[in-house]
Length: 156
Image (cartoon, rainbow, N blue to C red):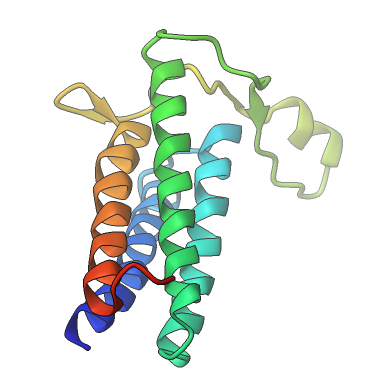
């Protein structure tokens, strides 16, 4: 069915694109992820793995349903993180720091940048990366769900 195939491809493309963007931001533009950024990435890693399995085994539609659920979770985490960044509510985590141990591990730890979850590192039109994750992930997950429903009725 065309709708099922579109759902599988979308469930793969969205986390692949979002994770690619996150890693480009990290390694090209030196945007260091905070703890909540990693939470969002974990959800998209799960979605990507499930979507890959769904592409390999199209008859197991449950994999695509689960991939869409993981995308939705990543988007909801993005909304929560954006709310923390915009000061709408307080976050549950402490700020994190990323270290790269070299010749002197103590110096690396002591000089590691402190990455705060409540500080926006980059934004476009007032929307942070976490906000964009929400704006992309939630509609995409809902579209995957709709395509799956259209493809085979309401059965997961």
